[in-house]
Image (cartoon, rainbow, N blue to C red; front, side, top):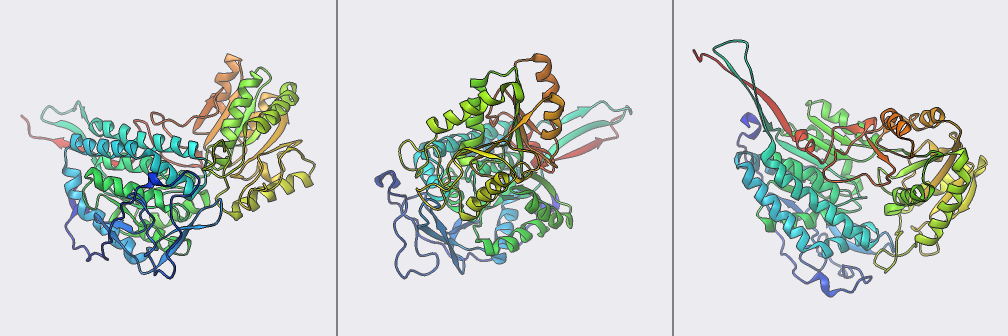
Length: 530
């Protein structure tokens, strides 16, 4: 790895904490994973019960306190789940140094051996899948069934990249000179800073970290302040799997510390790569920071996905796809549909059946309750944005078909909502709502639908339903997005390249292409051979 991995001194540990080993399984579903916080306990003292429930930072292979702690709350009730180490600039620099120091040995490890360790980590995730899912539901609020699905999806990236580690093939290029041979090598870029969101607190980590570790990079993970417990649980399992000290580091921090920590990760010269999933606005800030040291950057940013239903579509299939695409995780996914465009000949039938499906299939409740399909939004600010979008649309003539207000279950719960008579001038069609709101726009022609669909400056995912083969090819090629679902409302899969175009980001994650984001190409000219 050359000078990127040059040896430098690592600051002394900030202090190791004991590991709790109470069984998570002993707590009944719906009762919550974590006991009430210890009365009068100091910062970092309230450690949740269970081997995977950690509250300290994980740096250089050890659990470390910070000078302060911040609360992690259950979005369903507002109850405090734990107080987690509030890392700042010093802890961020220590984590970067730990990753840098671990880099030489990790990158030198044969790819097969890195793959074996990733596979062990995967196996431990599968063994602990129920407990990991409960942690997600506790801190994120999504229904337990969805959380279980996320854990399987999350673990699949470790499995996939465990296998891809041995496939970072180079090349041999025929030379124009008789006495030369030309080789192309692929080598790890170095330390990767991984900044992840709250909506998929496990999968967004492994999708990045699996690729980075397989490539031979080491990582520093800054999880979202709302959901740090999943990242710390993954650290515990990585440690159990034998991932060497310093290869996987986690520095949780509060919203107040996030800007300073993010700036360190983007400007520290020891960091070679930034991978971020989050809002376009935040991504632009990080890009400006990273520009000073010309770091490699990959970003999955905001989406504003269109869902087009043409007259030729199978209405029942379109409704099923719409339900899955819109209301998964209560509409809090970057690829969920934000705008429904329905052709006039099928519009009324689609709206009627969509409303019936919403009322029949969706149930709002606590994520731990049996039968819940719609958990809380992450916080009250998210609820207020949904309300603002509905109020704006109704004030301009939109009609509420179903839903439209907060749910009686609690302040962060909102009724799954369907709007008709929506126009492209309304706020809900211009901004990403990130909530359980489905606005439907009626259109006349294919050209009109494509113009509306392609009008935003972002392009992550797009969906459409049609049974016309020629139309399918035309629309798939003309949609200005990075991922297209044709007669399909869910497109995410470990084998497929995930990413967007325009201001929805840079680079791709998952698939055979994901590992390339963490590799440099080196050309070697071997001369004097005759």
